[in-house]
Length: 178
Image (cartoon, rainbow, N blue to C red):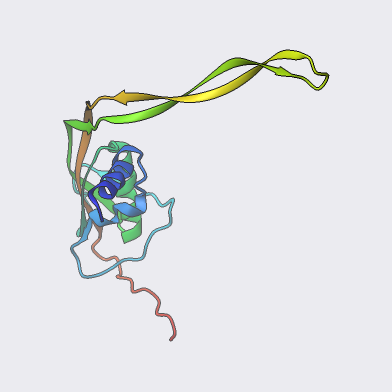
C-alpha cells in the first residue's frame, strides 16, 4: 500500500473520527485464561478510581491513546468491559497531553472557471442584423504555494483494568453443530 493511501487512512481515522468503538478492541489485552459472558449493551459497569472492597480478580487491561477526547475513551472502556463480561473497571492512569502537529501541504495548480459574455452580430430568421450575447468559459490557472498547517491537539492517555468478582463462573461460547 502506498504512502499516500496510508496517509489518507490515517487522516480518516484521526481527523474525521471514523474509528468506531468496535475498533477499540485492539487496546484490550486479556490477562486471565477464563472468558466471561458478554453483558447487554445497556448494562451498568462502574468505572472506579480505586479497587472495590469486594473480592475480585483482574481479567484484562485496556490501554489507549487518542485525540478523540476522554468521552470517547470512556465509551470505549465501557464497550470493552461489557464485551468481556467485566463487573467493573479500575482506572489506573488518565493523562492529557498537548501535541503540536505540522502538516505540509505541497504546492499545486488549480483551474478556476471564468464565464464571460461577448456580443456577436448575426442575421435572424427575418434577415435582419441583430446583436446576440454569446457566453463562453475560460479556465484561469491559479498557483497555490506550499504551506505548513500547524495545529495543537489534545491527546488522552488512559490505562484501566477490567475486573470480575472472584466467584463469577467462567463462560464458554456455545458450540455450533458441523
